[in-house]
Amino acid sequence: MAGHSKWANIQHRKGRQDKLRAKVFSKLSKEITIAAKMGEPDPDKNPRLRLAVKEAKGQSMPKDNIERAIKKAVGGEGEDYEEIRYEGYGPNGVAVIVEAMTDNRNRTASTVRSTFTKNGGNLGETGSVGFMFDRKGEITYPASVGDADTVMMAAIEAGAEDVESSDDGHVIWCMDTDLNDVSTALEAELGESDSTKLVWRPTTTTEMDLEGMEKLMKLIDALEDDDDVQRVTANFEASDEVMEQL
Image (cartoon, rainbow, N blue to C red):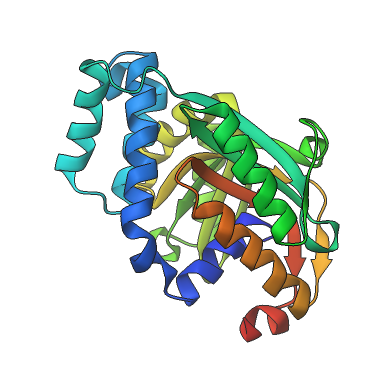
């Protein structure tokens, strides 16, 4: 697996999840509030909100926090937020997509630009690296739900495009517009997923050595520390030997 899947493994391995939990909850709350604001505040009638709530549950976000985020939208909060995508290059020419949600476009653009510059990268124009990624739906399940053949059959039945199975679990890919339908069908067959979300899937990757990976991690860490940044994706590829040294 290239890109964000390995990045998730790095985060887990380095024990960053606990330290980032409050920040993660904050970002998830923002997404829930915006999703509820853009449609019905009922997840059953609002696919984007349903996915946001599902992702929040997957990150063990308390039910009270989820309900509070939805109530914020009903109460009129979140009206000023807009979604912006930034594209740029990191160390060794790695393509990086930064998804942000902000109430101050100038502040966020300035911060993202300076973060790239300080960490050996540079911010490009919109579209400068986007062509190296496809917008996809990603659904993950633990290995315990079944073997590769079982999950593959369930995924085909559900209308998915591709499945990647390993000892760590199963990653199921689908068209971005089909994510709600595919995840619902899989849930009926395999149960609750670990994660269900829209992602940028790299179509081409850049091989990284240890020094390059350390620089890239520093850039991604700095970007993710910005409260306005919701998600960072990079098209890196690294050997198991490099990953184990991080």
